[in-house]
Length: 140
Image 1 (cartoon, rainbow, N blue to C red):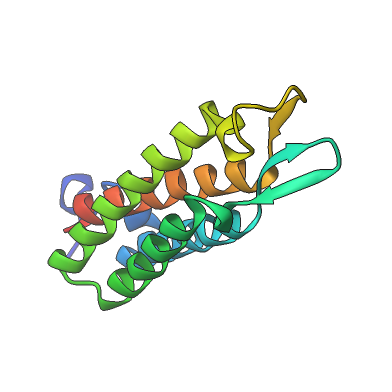
Image 2: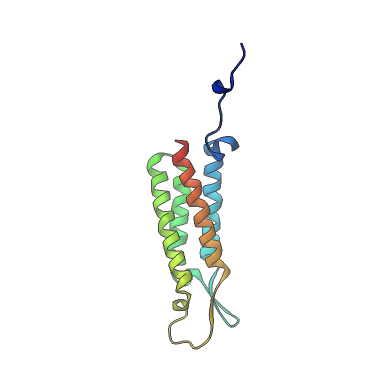
């Protein structure tokens, strides 16, 4: 029996073509691990001094990333919704801190303050995780 083009299964999403929800879960976990690494890394630099994320909001983003990884590993809709919500909160926190990086060292400094690599890695990881988690909703 021959199969016509209309009867063949065509992947709807990139995740389906790469293996379904395993690919999106792996993407979410990779993004969340990057978020965790960025949360520990330096969020602000003043001259040769770095201020790590864990001296401020990085503690919250690290905790939310850890909870989100556990939720993704469980893989049910409720935990995935929790992971998505926490990841959105992390994007907002890290984005705010990236724009207002000078508050990491205080407003009284006259020295130039720049964002550390940890902020960029945390933000990129959170965005990757958010897109992967959105793929979970498309796949289900």
